[in-house]
Structures are given as C-alpha cells and as structure tokens.
Amino acid sequence: MALTIEPASATIAARDTQLFAAQQNGQSVPAEWEVVGQGTIGKSSGIYTAPNVIFISKNATVVAKAGQEEGAATVVVSAAHTWIPVLSAYLSLAAVALLASLYLYWGEAKPGKIAFLAGGLGACLHGINSLVAYVGNRQFASSWAPFYLFRPFAGGILAIIVLWVLRGGLAENVVKNGDSVYTVAAVAGLVGLFSDIALKKLEDIVKGLFSSVGAMLSGERDKRTDKLNTSQAAKPVISGTDPKSLKADGRPQALEISGTGLVAGSRVKVNGNVRKITSETPPSKLVIELEAADVQAPGKLKLVVESPQGPTSDEFIVEVA
Image (cartoon, rainbow, N blue to C red):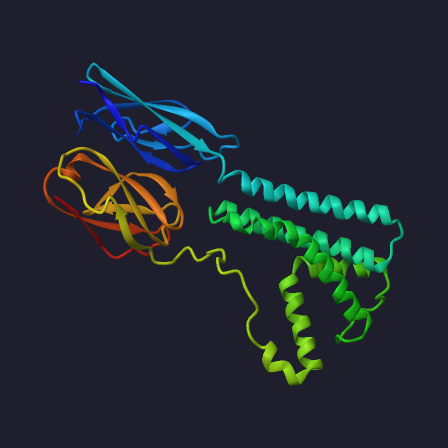
C-alpha cells in the first residue's frame, strides 16, 4: 500500500514548525522521518522545524519510511518574516548616510543644518537600539518597518524645532553658548535620542503659553501599544491547544500551546512530567512533543507552563479520547 504524507506540501516561516503525518489507505501509521535540505525533523514525531534565519526562500524535502514504503512532502521555508528586520536596519543606516550627505552638500556649518543632522543621528541610534531589542526578544512586528525608516527624519525636524524654542527664550535654563557648534550638535543629538522626552517638554511649554487649552493637551498622545515586554516574571496563561483534543492511539505527537507570557526558556509539564519543547514563538506559542504514554489510554492531560523566573500557569486540561 502506497505511503502518503499529509500535508503533501507546506509553506512556513523561519523558526516555525510543521507537523507531518504518514498515512496508508487513509489511516495514520507510525513512520521514521528524515529531512533533505534545510531544517530538522523529529525522527518519530514528524515535527519539522525551520532554520532560525533564512534570507532567501528555500525548499526542503520531508521523507517518511514505514517498512518498505516511502513517501515525501515538500516544505517551502519563506524568508518573508526575517528580511524585514534586516531591511529596517539598513534603512536606518541609509538614513544616516543621507543626512551626512546633505550636511556635506550644504557645506557651511550653520546651526540649523547641524541640528538636523545631529537630531537625525540621535534618532537613528534610538531606532537601532529599539530594533535590536525587539528582534532579540522575537517581538518584532513588520508593520513597524516605516517607523524605523522615518524616525531619523522626525528626529532631525524635532531637533530644529527645539533649537528654535531655545534660541527664542521660551524654555527655562537655556544652555550657555547657544550658538556654539558643539552645543547645538549636543542638544540636537540628545533631542533625537530622547525624542519622547523632548516632545513632552515641548508639550509642557505649549501648556504654559496657552493655558486656556491646557486641558485639551493633557490627554495621552498616541503611543506604541506593543511595548517591549521586559517583565520576565509575568505569569504564563494557557488559552488553548492545537489540536484541542487528542486520540488515544499511543503514538508520540506534537501539541501546540497558545497563550500569553510563554517566554523563551519556559518548561512545560504534562501530568507533572516535563516534556520536550520543540519550538518557541515567545510570548504566545510553544510546541511540545507528547510521549506515547501521554496518549496511551483515554483520560485527561493536565498542562502547566513554568516561567524561567518562577511563575507557573494554572492547569489547562486536554481531553484524550
């Protein structure tokens, strides 16, 4: 009987996983797995894990062997989710080069030009630090790529506005030697680097000048809603699994756990026993490999996620029928 693999083909992103199943005559059968090309696969589980970094989309072949029969499936590992952070970094660096070129083109070291260049450099530094933090914590969202592109220009413009405010005498404790090239560059660079603080200071100045509209300006400005989660001690929460229930067939299989606070380095226990984590997508997804004993007979699996800093999730029940 011919051996087939479900799914016959799949497209996934770097670091993602895909569960494959070997079938004969429409029924799942145990098989030994291997992969030809990029990535790794569990020899008995059929869980394929894509490489961590892919710059060009590549194909891999998943092969299953059951007795004398053999089947194959194709995996396309897409680079769509990994080139965006790299592109954003290059955009930030390109913005710095552009600002430097404009400065050299203009020639004269006038305060306004220095402020624009230094503000842009400071904002670019802030953007790169932010990018590295989000990518390193695997919380980068591709929708924020324009933020990193335009931030250097916004920093330069903001620095010029702050320069006008300082030279206009609207701010208290104005620095001495306000026309010094180094003073202008230092203040502008700090404005670009700490633009949120600079905007808040300008807001305070406007409130003082126009007290009648102070109440209108007292509301919160639009802020980034997906702040980097630096609180590693947050309690994990399990919201669901895929599949939602399991079949008591005594075969090792993958179980995807979704929720919040599922940080890197977490441990997953099934009925009190630690199970191997085959894939992590912090902070919302983990994939574990269930052992044959977990699904040997009908019953309930009690799942618990333990954070590396100590907090433990409440029990989540998965039915085995």
